[in-house]
Length: 474
Picture 1 (cartoon, rainbow, N blue to C red):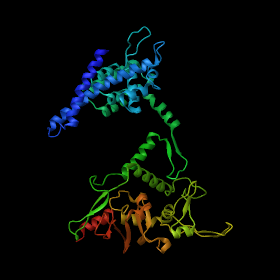
Picture 2: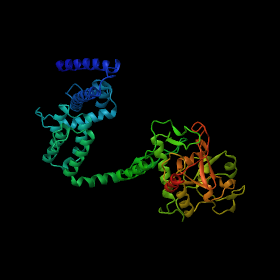
Picture 3: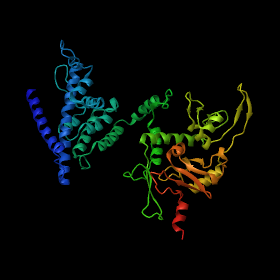
Picture 4: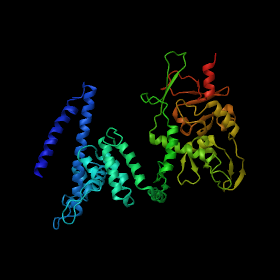
């Protein structure tokens, strides 16, 4: 054991010297591309070998903790730690997640000891050899072990060992297809295929477990919003991910400054638009969820509530809405919300005026007003193509129609006064700096000052027909 400690100390000394050269002295600067690749390859192999030592050591510590020598006590407790995970975290400075990965892999590749003290065959012996030889690290080894071990007792030992041998060969680059050594993602895909072959009936238990664990819960409202938690079934998450991918399909220059910027070399020339969204991905996904719920609620395909579509009802005092001060209330929510929610709902949906006297009696009940009908929506979609804010990729079917001149200010519910905006740009139009006007029935936008120093009104559209006309116009 002392010899092993000396060897690791020597390895640490060498690694420290290399790190000093690479990180401290910048030895890689000016090196050839081939040299960089060689360094990357060698460093990866060293890391995999060190990970093999970590896996075996964590497995040994875990075994001694679970089976302590009588009178000695558990190893983690003797070193002042609550459990093995804490001991490994303190000694290796790894995260709990990384510590758990080491422990899971150790169970798959370590040689158990019989009651007589004899070493037994590990669960995945070929994978153990691959790990020992540095052909696969923790990522690659877990990519193999995870799917195979998930088959449980439903796969025979003989079939499991066959899959273990084939996948280990793939990790070495010695597989049946003579492909180069597979990376972790490739090994995971291949292991999943083997798991499906070994356990064709496993899909049903997984489906049943997913059905039991599926959940979506709204938490208690806070001043910042309503927290959510739950577990989506794979196909539900995949469907939402497809919607997210469709909306976030990149049409932007990732190196540009945040926002939508107009660049003009010639003031009389057409502007090039570089669009970069400043929202985080999590914020974008929130806004996509809001947009998706709005589309679903207005699709007339959902069950009705009280004979009407499941429409969000926002109530506000008329004097508050006019003055721009006060709070709004959402049906089904316990916390009041800012007036922007009411103004947003008023622009996209219908308004029904209900007059109450001082005692609360309903003295006047108006009819629903000012909503764009289907024919108007189709016409506006043909004209605008999608959200009219430059660089926004949200298609017309997912957009809301904005009254450019507010209905309360006399703006008509007419195609000459409606423009397509996605949920995000519509909800935050007043604070975004973007201005919108209608010019003879065509929407025009003006960018914020810091984005467009020219402050020009520009006609915008993503309609293929209008864009084609612009190109072919003599």
